[in-house]
Length: 521
Image (spheres, rainbow, N blue to C red):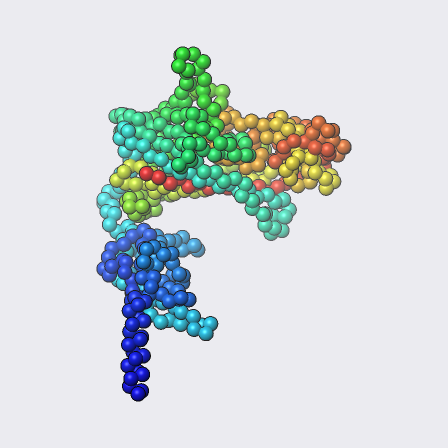
């Protein structure tokens, strides 16, 4: 009888195992060469209810999870190019690797290993990209008719804290003020042979949001979104060298069908975001060179007459290495601009106040597709820290009454400041040209002034034309201007009921812009 019971139990166990399916890694195959993001596929019917999977690489734990289902499989997406968050180094190196999946189930509240499976693969993110002994010659390729579309995602944040609080170790709260998404077309309309090599005529233009007939953006100098139609998305043209330097540019004036009424399009909708500058000589991983970063610099008054719409800022370039990215062999270019207090002694700072202890940094990475001669991905982070003298209120009331937590004022100037931020001043209209969305009363507008001073962020036009500190606190007028015509307030909108006054205090302001450009096709 016992023999019959044991036999029946064995048969039942075998049938159950067959019904569930073997717990095994179906993909990748043993011995396969893999790179980028790898789908580790395990039959879904081999994992019982309440079970989950642990992933190990070369004996190191990666993650315990129940992956997404794709067809008949659970699929764990292993990012083979992941970085260590502390050191920034790659977690896994090219070469042989053992990938193991472990099946866990809960047994009386405790995790128990019931099965495991593994494959031996070869990791190849870099080794198959051969670098010549004299280095890689990175060049843009200009093929007339080729169009490339990039998705730009932009995030800005700002933090403010008094100098006294900062010296005591206080931490300023960080507020993400704007997020913008825009699609941009870079089309090659023609190719030429220049003095130093190939040149291309690029047509650059904003596009509607994907699968839509319109685009939603935050125009420069504004804080609210606006839906624009395709007829407002006019192109401009840049002729560039094969390393990305500007030869000349043109923002055309368009004429009606009758040949009259010539007019320029709204500069707010021109995405003046130049391509990165490439090294002039062949480079190998680890090589560094004196580079530059181009920024859009358009004067509204002469925009349709000028032949140069960018300004070059000196930078340090380095070839970090090569890697596969979305099936493309890419060179990773690291660009850094870093300026400290000594470098910025004569630089105009926020609101054109002389910076006393300002730090400016730009750090970018470009994944340049070697075979296509085009940018595959670009990440740029720009930050600025400034010590700015502001006017504080003599009483804890809100000056100028504006509808944001700072000084009031209208578009041209206005009410006094409050006890936290600057005097009034309002926002005014920008000078024109594409800028990233505004941060409060400032906007990202890198460039040099007539005296040769450079800054990444500048106060908006209204703020720059304010008069100075308010008079001591008096009841404001209903006109919304408070009692004095203050200097450049940070977030001022309409004025209010009370003015402000008081002494001076120093504030530490930190601004950051981060954007990612991704090739769509």
